[in-house]
Image 1 (cartoon, one colour):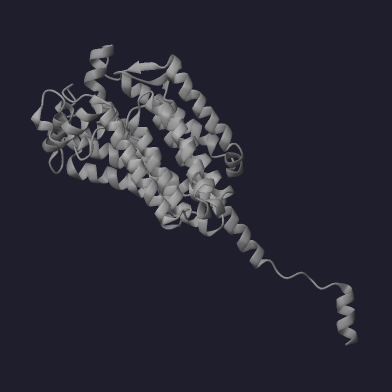
Image 2 (image 1 turned 60 degrees about the horizontal axis):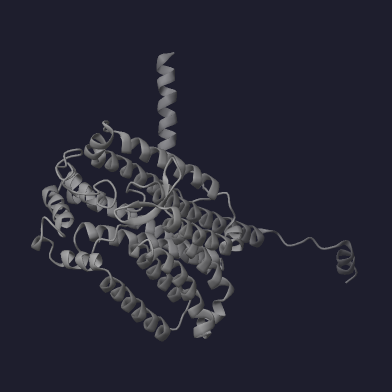
Length: 413
C-alpha cells in the first residue's frame, strides 16, 4: 500500500517535471522576477534594519513587519490593477494626473517633514509619498497623449512637443518645492525617452535635452546642499566625517564584501555607521553581505525585468496597441534609470538623490506604485496575447458555407 502511494507520488512529480507548462495568457517570467525581487528586498531590509529597529523600538523586527505589510498591500493593489483594461487607464489619464497634482499640493500644506524635506502625507499605517504617484500618472498621461497626438508630436514643435513639457513643468515645480530633484530627473529622462520613441524630431529632441541638462545644473547651483552633494561625490574622502560620510561608509561596505560577501546578516556598516542602510543605501548592504556575486544577481534580475518590459512594449507597438506600447516602454526606462541612479549613488558614481531601489528598498509608497506598474505590464502583455489569439482564430476560421442559391447556380452551370 505504502509502495503504491510512493510510486504514484513519484509518477506525479516525474510528470510535473517532464511535461511542459500549459500556455498562459500572462508572462510568468515577469511574475517570478517581481516575486524574486520582492523576496530579496524583504530579506535585505530585514538584515539591514536590525540595529536601527532595535534602537528605535526595542525590537529587531519592526521594519521587517512593516515591510511585509507593504508587500502584502502591494500584491493586493496588483491583483486589483491587473483586472483594469488599458482603455480605462487611457480614458482616465487626465483624472489621474490631476489627482497627483492635488496630492502634491496637499503634501506641501500638511506633509510630514523628514530631514528638511516635506514629501509624505501621514495616513496612519504608512506615509503616502505623492511623488511616486506623480511618476506613474505622468507616464500614463503621456502614453495617452502620444496616442492621441502622434501626428502633432512628429510634425509640430509647439503643438505636439512643448505641450507635454508644460505638463511636466507643472509637476516639476510642485516636486521641487518639497524639494525632490531626484524624482524630477527620473521623470524628465523617461519623458525624453517616450518622446524619442514616439518619433519626435532629433533636432527638437537634442535642443530640449540640452535645455533640460542646463536646468538641472542651475537647480544644483541654486541650493548649497546640492552643491555639497556634488563636491562630496567627486571626492568623498576629502571630508570623510562631514559631507562625504555617507559615501565613504557605503564604499567601505562594498570593499568589505569582496567576491562572495561577509555572509547574510554579517554587515558591519549597517550597525548605524551607514545612514539609511535599509532604504536608499540597501544596495551597499547587499554588496557587503552577498559580495560581487550577490550584487550581480540582483542587478541581473532587475534588468531582466526591464528587458521584459521593453519586449512587451515592442510587441504592443508592432501589433498596433500604441497606448500599451508607450506605457510599457516608459515603465522600463523608469525602472532602469532609477536603478542606475540608486546603484550609482551607493557606489559614488553619481551624486546621492534619495531614490529607492525598485521592489527592494524599504518604503510603502514605492513598493505599492512599482508593483502597480508591474501589474500594468502584465495587463499589457495579457491584452497582447488575447489580441494575437483572436487574430489567429480569425485566420484559422473556415470560409463561410455557400448559400443554397449558389449551389443551385453551380449545378445549373
